[in-house]
Image 1: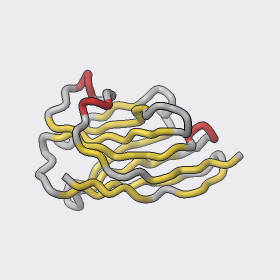
Image 2: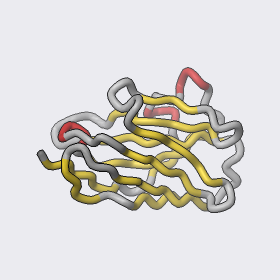
Image 3: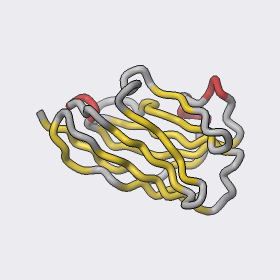
Length: 125
């Protein structure tokens, strides 16, 4: 599995960004795709996840109502639309793929076996 994240950048607080994750190397119908982030000095944390088949989603409480995860099966891509960004959203964002992840584990880092390189999101005040 290859995952290529892109779309990070510098944005002012209150602004928006859309991250993309291009996925290849597998048929992803039995996968869950997730976004995680890691701020300097912090542990990597869950942001959002989507089940490729069916499209069920899960979000961290800190981003609910502001972020939206989606996938495009035709393009084998996963997106993270981030609105109303806050300075505390500043982090390196990673996309990840997990095979056969159950609903209750969608927010668990160890459930994901494949990771892309990160893309840096910086939110200025």
